[in-house]
Length: 105
Image 1 (cartoon, rainbow, N blue to C red):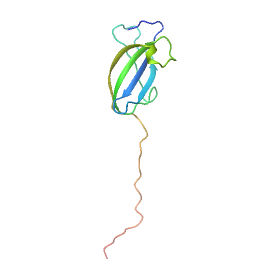
Image 2 (image 1 turned 180 degrees about the vertical axis):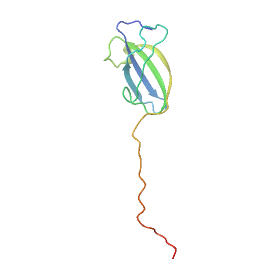
Image 3 (image 1 turned 60 degrees about the horizontal axis):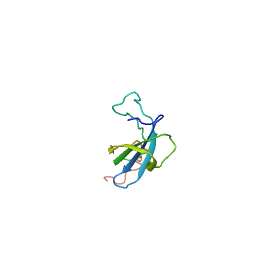
Image 4 (image 1 turned 60 degrees about the vertical axis):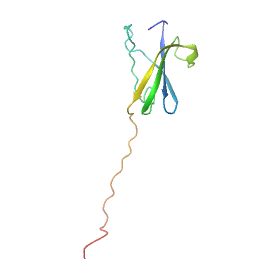
């Protein structure tokens, strides 16, 4: 997997519905394994991905500042599903009963 030294991994997630792209560099967790690359993506810390279906692209680069995919080597493409993201929860308190509107007389 590694052809550059040092190597930086650039991830692009493209929303299949809106075509909006989300991009970030991630650090490889298992650098001693040549069979596969393991990465941790923490939302929304690393990337704020809304729930949905995505096509992803992984590139390798010799620095972690470039964002032009045409200048990078594409390593992998695939599909990803984001099932839910933590966000602000809207909660409402029930109003207190002030007075009875209807009474039996």
